[in-house]
Image (cartoon, rainbow, N blue to C red):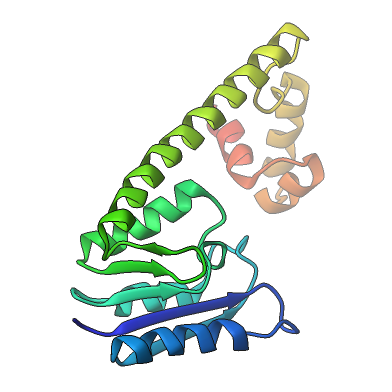
Length: 187
């Protein structure tokens, strides 16, 4: 067996990591394995959780990736399945102490399979809700996407650009993207 790669996270600076750190340390001690601990004080809503990325990168074949609770690792079943799937591909087992989720056991492997089913279910539900929402909006006469830019506005954009205004300034003035300004000029 390799090492324990521990990951602890709290959402704000004033929250305390002690309970998570102690639980993971105790787990590593009980297994008689070296602990490498990564800690982070950042909301899970942040896409870039650097310490999580470092922890996953550090995990190698034979290691155990350990968290105190599943919600410390992921916001959704889909995200959890992706992260644990990435670890599995590297030959790294996954353990969530508080949730009794342990892929080193047959029960844990079965739970991982069910996690895959729930991740797919979650994806399907989101797709159905999105489709239903778009259909309801369509029935109310709403069409998705940004509103089309009328010819009068396009002429003004071209005239401003030809008179020396920058694409950035024109974009700000009309509330459109710079790429849209260039697209108008190209047409």
